[in-house]
Picture (cartoon, rainbow, N blue to C red):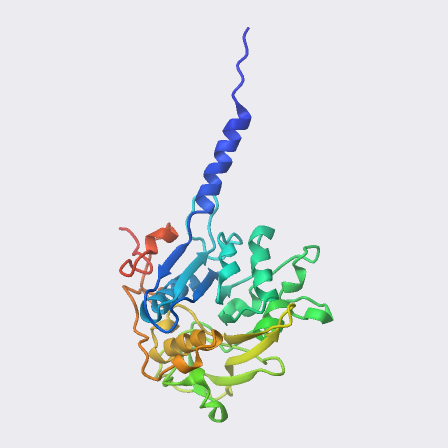
Length: 342
């Protein structure tokens, strides 16, 4: 009896190529044409498990590109088999874009990336690139002790980089919630002695939909805004009198392996609903300009309007489609994110 053998190796190679093409599809990029950040490249990395970074960061990227002229590349946690955005996945293709980036905006949680995706982040930090960290980025990496990248873990014990990327780069690691999340929103109040800082120009009535975090920024940090927990989910909700204000946004510098100092802005807020608030949105846009050294281009009346249909789904009744690929968010007018199909 004749036996037939399938060409297994070519078949496996084809499958591998297909998976690679799905996971390594061209990243989502918004190309700016004119504005104070023209010629600047911003890489925004979104992969958390709860606060919808995959909604916040594409919209922030659109604003920076459309109104300020930056080239903004948005990277997501991706299912390598389907190419769909899967928030929280430790697979973020495209981090090599950081090689030429002028700013990293990171909103991740508990990531343990493969070496080819983690190394570009390390290289970027080693050269002292500016960093903006949002919400769960304080605990953006959860990496085993036997990994060559273990020191970036949010609980790293070594004295040379204690508490990892969060504490040593952003200024704080995960400490805990400060009040009931989903039941308590947060008012952000300017610290009077730092009211003249460029990041705060034009910022008023800042409010975050998400609840407060405990935070005690590392020595040398300059707290720009304190976070006052409220007893409800509206900007007008009463103050929680049992919760004194807690640091909610700060700036600092870190010293890189190259010896260069890198500017950092960190806020323990940034859920997708937070971006709807004009004050908070201006804070983030100003921070992006400041970290890139564009202090003189921060004007109190700069355009910070939303670009395209923005549909945040962290809180409330809005629903969205589950299976979305980054390319579906291309252009200025595609919804972030598409509605759930009925």
